[in-house]
Image (cartoon, rainbow, N blue to C red):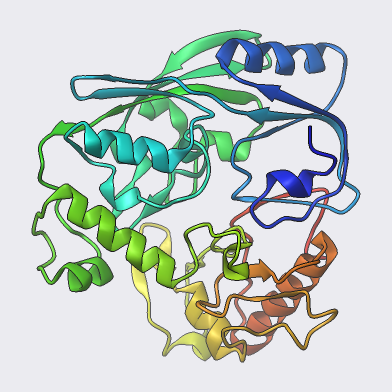
Length: 338
């Protein structure tokens, strides 16, 4: 068993927990959560720990590490335990001649986290592939099969699971297509890498290879020897604004149902925070990635306090320059930007 939560997260920070447990299947997961709830013990469920920052004081409760092995492919339907590594699922579906997940290659974490975050990348998103999922309701002590419509998907990175810890995902079923051709390419950087037009289809393995290469260049594929990957990926959400402040009028922007979306990376860089910024800040153990500014990384020996201090410094700099407040995309437990 681990001695600190830092051993369970990709950013490698986080203090001790009162109790560490492991769930290897859905029944064990329900039992561990139910038992803690009945005894009044706080619960923190962790899959791959790729979108989580826990404070240096740790977690005064039960940590449940979710693992699993069930990956059933029945025609075009794929059912997966919540604890199965996500990228292994992507590879398995491609090996089975299925199309749909290829643009989501290389994303760290476990399958159960993908609906929580409504994970999306390179023009694809979990919600578009989701058929159903099995959910444990901690309030009613019952399990049920949900449809995508019940998940409260709003925008990228939004769901009812993100907004409440009431529900625990046990397994997920995806509906894919039996074809060797990818979904239509929707993302400019991907179309450029593949040398095709937006809307074209290409062999599924080609999309996976291109996405893995693009993610690797940005430090977004886990590598224990590369501190640029000791992160939670994108730390801040792209802000969606009802009105764009005058100071940001020249920023690149995109229409959104809630207003106008501006890339957080552009705001950070143009507020004076280049790639690699942070080695001169505080103890120098936390810094922006040397590959892209949206990732705050642990350069080795960073604490959660170091990560929070740098994140607050960047947030405040963007606010001062543009009048826009950046919001963390990751889950913060017993820590805050202040």
